[in-house]
Amino acid sequence: MTKRRVGVLVMSYGTPESLDQVEAYYTHIRRGHPPTPEQLHELTARYEAIVGGFFPLRENTNKQVKGLEDTLRAEHPEVEFVCYQGLKHAQPYVEDGVEQMVKDGITEAVGVVLAPHYSTMSVGGYVKRAKDKAEELGLKMSFVLDYHLHAKLIDALSSRVEKALTKFPDAERNDIRVIFTAHSLPEKILEMKDPYPDQLLATSKAIAERVQLTNWQFGWQSAGQTAMPWLGPDILDVLKQIHKEEGVKNVLLCPIGFVSDHLEVLYDIDIEAQALAKELGLHLERTESLNTDPLYMQTLSDVVYTKWQEES
Ligand code: FEC
Image 1 (cartoon, helix red, strand yellow):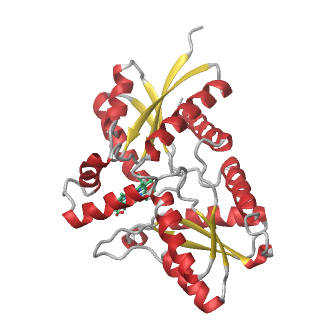
Image 2 (tube, rainbow, N blue to C red):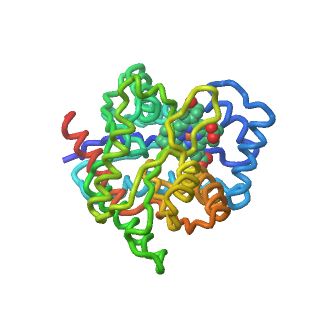
Image 3 (cartoon, protein in one colour):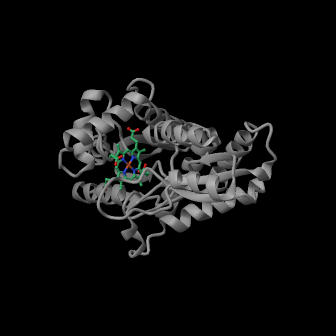
């Protein structure tokens, strides 16, 4: 019997592949408006600061997509799952991924984003672009919208917190403030009753319960520099506040909104937040990113397979 072939569009943020691509990438993020020379200089400097301009997101996404395809095929040998990439701000764009599936003769597909929490501005944006293209080309496509409470994701994140807590050998567990973080979004999402903040809090609570944390909170990171207000408090303000007002000395950051090592983790946490911690005399550590953790690959495989079954 011939196997059913199912396309999987794995969507992710995208990154420039070299410093000379930063301007085009930034222009795409800014919906076609080129950055000012100052903005471009500032972003380029951030990429240069992370291991001399090396762009880890590209390779990490390649490995995650391959890892998901291998896991799907191993767990469901009766179906031929074929994974494609669709990036938000770099090639191959979301639309290119859909087009490639159709060129390859795929007639049914599932879309999933490498971000566990749903927001109209993040996952919703990826899904809309893929859906529009799939409809245009007549491809049957369904979408995973979130997986922030999947048991294997919570297992993977909890074991990272457990492991990172051992980096404070001189502190009692309850003396370490664990701060779960995610990318901030413009405050206007609250008026839209967006599930993003509640989903992030739900993931944080599930991990805290599993690891039996009592000393934890949530903070936003990486907010954009625009005139509109973004969700806060920002982790840099949180670090200052808990140091000054609560006398906290040990902090573990756990970026639950991200699944890979990239600029927002390697610069915003490892360089920017770390520099502030040093200045304040705080001991700051961060949990390791999920990258290709088998539990994360199994989470993605489960949600893709379940979605495909629901729709077939
Ligand atoms: O390593 C890399 O090269 C890329 C790292 C990267 C990831 C990422 C993930 C998310 N973003 C989200 C929201 C926004 C909104 C804006 C925005 C702007 C930027 C800029 C850079 C950037 N983001 Fe990002 N984001 C990454 C990088 N992001 C660079 C432009 C300069 C700056 O503001 O720092 C504002 C523009 C807009 O309105 O689009 C909003 C969210 C995520 C997590 C979910 C996901 O991965 O899709 C939400 C990785």
